[in-house]
Length: 142
Image 1 (spheres, rainbow, N blue to C red):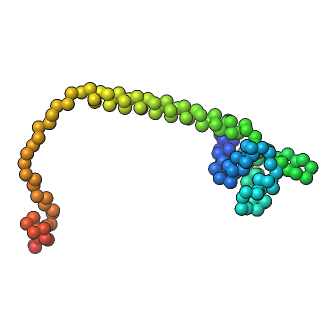
Image 2: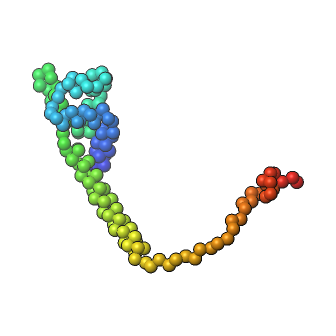
Image 3: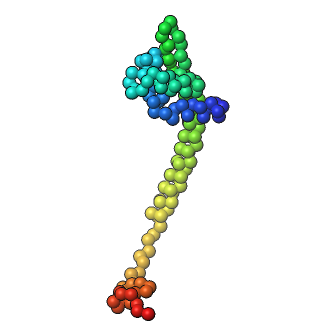
């Protein structure tokens, strides 16, 4: 798929209203009026969304007398899915390799004998804060 077409497809899919229109059309053809029903927007606003979808090649309009039926066209979606699938496979393979590497490190760590560390006993030293008298924790008088 050409990069510009891919960009146009993803730009059209970026809007939730346009995605909802496509979901509706996935169930079958519909008129502009039928597509506008579930939305709280005017017919001209829906028509603008449909124009964006048409320019992206995601929707086609057919005139049947007075009715303008809209239908989904799958080619741009298939191309976008194919493009995404390439990256999914790439990252899935890389993440599988990382997972295998981390599992190997963990197994090696579990197989190493643990040597006990000697415990040190002592008294805790008081914390000194610069600028404060250690005995009173008040500001030092200069």
